[in-house]
Image (cartoon, rainbow, N blue to C red; front, side, top):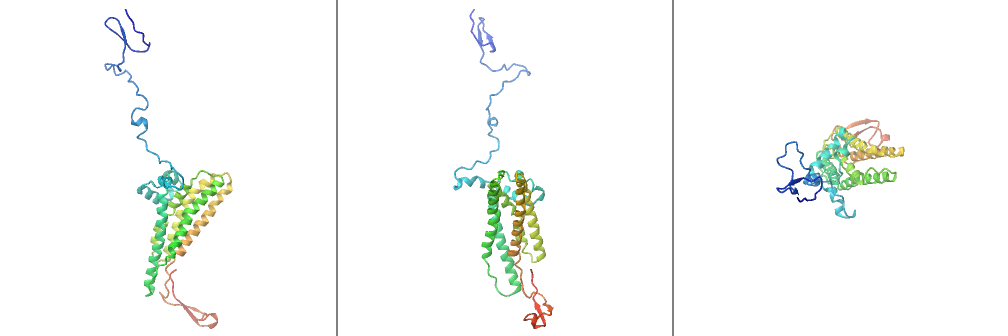
Length: 298
C-alpha cells in the first residue's frame, strides 16, 4: 500500500486502491446549512478597497504663486455656496457654522460675496441718488464713480486684509487652530447680509434705512463673534480675548461707513414747507428777523 505525505489539517480522499490524495476543491456543495462558508480574502471587491467612499478634497500642489495651488479651493458647486451664504443670516446656526457648513473652507464663495457687495453698494446708491435728483430738480444726475473705488477699498480691506492680519496675529500669539483660508472664507461669507440690505436701502425712508443697517450690523457681527471668540478663548493668554472688542469697533466703523457713504444719499432741498427759525436773520444772528431752511431727507 502506497501513501502520499500531506499536512495533517488538509482534507484527504481515499482512492480505489487505498491511495490518499489532497483535495484542491472548494467546500463541499452538499454540506448542510450549518457548514461555515470560506472567508474572502482581504481587498476583494470595490467596497473593501474604499472605491465607494467619498473622495476628500485633493491637497494643493505647487507653490502658492501657482494657479494649481488655489484650484481646489474654488472647486465648489453653486448650491453649496448659496447655502453657506443664507445660513450666515441664521443666528441659531452661527455657533456651529464652521464644523457644519464651512467644512472644507473655500475661496469661491467669499470672493463672489465681496465682489457682489461692491457692485450692490455702487448701483443701489447711484440709483437712489438719480431718483432723488429727478424728484428734487431738473438737473441730470452724474454718476460718481469714486463711490465704486471707495466701495472696493472698504470691502476688500475689511473682507480680505482684516482676516489675514487677524490670522497673522493669532499665529504670532500661538493660536494655530485657524487657517488663513478658513479666516478669509468666514469673513467673506459673513458680509453676505449687506447685499440684500444694500438693495433695500433704496427705500426713501431714513428710519427704515437705519433699521436695515442695524439689522445687518447685528447679524453679521453676531455671526463673526460666535465663530471667532471660541478661537480667541483657546489662547493661553487671556488678554487675547480683548481682540474681540477691537473687531467689534472695526465692524461698527464699517456699518457707519456704509450708512454715511452709500445709504445717506437722499438730500433734496426745498421738498417741503419752509421752517422759520425766529431770532436768526438771513445774514446771520446779528441781522435779526427770520430764516427759512428747506426740509431735507436725511
